[in-house]
Length: 586
Picture 1: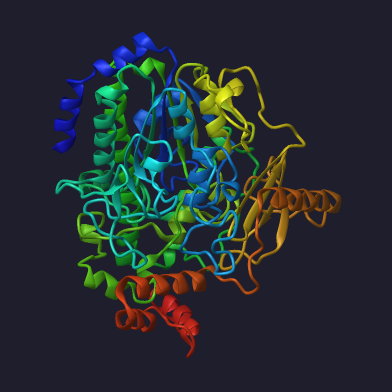
Picture 2: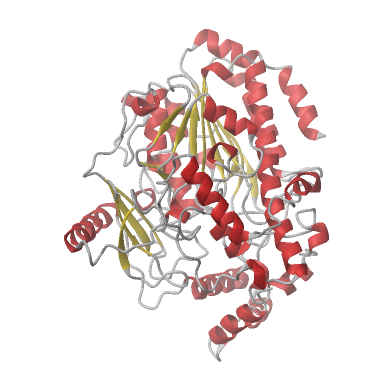
């Protein structure tokens, strides 16, 4: 396999790491971003998938219990790489859901704006070798790719996702899978598998001689476990029995494990299941087989990702560089609830692109797969909702840190933010003097075991993506979720006692509710949040934006065909979309 050949080739060039250690004592930094992993997906957090590499990092480092990120991929990535709020960085949302009123506005250019610096730019300026491999999704125009933002070497996907076996798109919004190496269009090898290939690329870059006398900053942004979930069936087969009892059982099991591990109070209630989610008992036998295998593919893909991360860790160990490498592993948001095959026109698009969705081949080459809203809701347990929404099922994710300057076997229970990662890395790298102000705060003192909390009782942490918003202050959380899984109302929760966000305290604690609303207004004005237009619907906006992209990609006649195919505008098109969605949801 290509991974073995590249790994052996890399071992022949391991002098770079030993030389770096001899000449520069500053730590190397490896930031690993998993796509759409839930809070409890890793084994160290009580998940079902086998993740021994990540678990070992947690055992010799720090495990965070109240780490939050934005509920959507690109804003989270902008915050992680810059240490700024997503609106300040320029990536407040993603192209698929942005309304026309926001396009091009400050904070909504959907690319890192002029003057915004990434960790790579800052560390490169103080002598670090900077490399990345994986999903980028932070701007597509000239000067928007990683090579223009501090990465000396990069192999990047400029899309929200792509196929994991071939160079092809996974949804109609994209015509192809746009991969770039060092800013230039690139092709994938015939034996491509995303997790393996991205680790191979990173090892190739780290083994190049230009980095021999410098520490490195490496950013590894896996496609796992974003739609389409895909993996060798040998991994999938291991988990079929694990998930055979269904999503209702899994949600309760994860809640109980969370309590046993001390992540939530023993008596904390679990958020009720929304009426629109199907009970497992309502499925036919064939449907149960299909969805059981879907969740098995998801876990298998996570295990495969962990395996390939282990190859990178072994590479660093063999080089003598591991002990001097800070490693951070986290997720960009909670689990993905989308059910693309239930969307109007998607089955025809699949047929045109030779993609199938059936139990026997699920996750293999030429297939699509996903877990859907019911499994996503279960995976997000013990919290409420999932990706895209500001409930903790969308925001609260794992964060593990290990390496020099980090105490061994500690757990950090105080709230933290994805914006804290950049200032933390800069401080651990000894580069505080080279940076401007961050929105986030350094976690270095907490990681060393010297500070129990990073944020005080009166400090706020805010998040907002496309109208879904949250503000955390101490034990209180203010939340608003829009249609279709919310109603646009602000609610107040005591998340210390009620992490599942089950009891709205806005009426019983009106003074606190008023204070939190005022605090959110100040925060939103400070970072540049724009209010959503009246009548905004994320599903309708996705359809409109996808159709506009089709017109731009394929021209007028095919675009008009897509317009009719995907639901259309006018002539009852939106009604048709909703009705077809209900009918086609298997």
